[in-house]
Length: 602
Image (cartoon, rainbow, N blue to C red):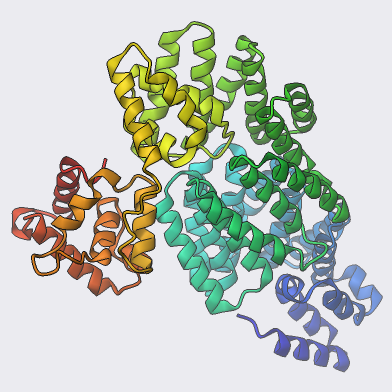
């Protein structure tokens, strides 16, 4: 981490001595960090100390001037000095590293302006050839190049590829010992893994990002990025209370900088969370506030996202005409990635208005896009709507095909919530149809228990009168579990990290509630049976659900060595001696199969 105080002293000393060339190089090398931590006024004061002719001609200072304009939100004004600096470094001086650094600033400029196509052109046709031929020897620049590819990939329908690019960025930043870069790559990895539904790995990356942030004292903007990633991590799992608590902290921190775009993001995120929790009035207030703040900070480019979230709120409250108008406004200038997201809402409006051919076409276009991108959570949500479209068109075969695919994916990836386009009434209808068709009842049960709750209870009560005996039995079972959710199986445990882990495992359906009492008995010896060990139970629950020893240690608050001892003990309780298995993974799989057979996991 750069000592900014010492840097500023050195720079001012050089300026006082008239060593302008040396000072300009030093300023350009640290301008991005100075802008983030010291703000535009400090950068402006330093720039003002240079002769005006140097500011207008020297490539280093043209680059700094471009960063200044970007920092002030003057994106169009930033392009000219940056392009001049790029050509000066590359053509006039042959300084490839410095030219690439400016080129990456131009990429950032176009990315912020939502010109994804132009940003990608710069990356692939201007920057990449210089990197591929070995002319760029600064690993930080390699890291920044892959970081941009990772951030742009989701907008191009390449969510899965985003993970690979972020990992390459992290590796490059580690080589450069760049904590800022490592942090950004880790938060990007966490966000991409969250969208892909890999919550175990996402949590590990969030923990690593938090450690880097603490180590490097990376500042307010980095803290906001960490909180943003954490909000999505909770939201995508349907943990709305946790997400809202972090979002409140996020908004409070963002509001400390009156001109920050984070202020807009915070209000939209809070609105989305309130909407997901059914507090539609609070969601509307958040979206209205986001519009006001977007105007205050000159961030009108984000208005289309506010329109789309407002449209979904109108869909939920039955104001379909208003929803359609908001969606049309958002789609007017949308690129492909945005259009594929935005038109899902339009597809649902047409579904609800019984315009089934239009709904089917729009939803299938978006489904194809998200399947290609690897975004399985979004694809499952769209298949739910296609199931209803097919049912209303009397296409039972098509409805079964779509729903079978969606639920199979949810079972494979252990998805129990669909954060994008969550519509409780429509999800309930699909889940009831799944019960009637006897499709993946365990997945449906988790949806009812963890996320639909009382909003789906009335539909289940109606199914108790169904002609099919199995449907009646499924409905009774889920209602029984819904009514018994307030029973705290963990009341006898004191508060600890292990108890919190067990709470999450039970609530997320990763440990079966109906088998938990038997599990407690099995994982205790005769001497301690009266007082079960929550840490052993938590280690078991995480281990059979795929967590590594390091991840388990971080979550339950003990050492890796202790985790190893617990796992050895667990194997002994289940009678799985090491010499029975050729590999460690084979032994672990045998444990998983036994746990499933005994009703401890699904």
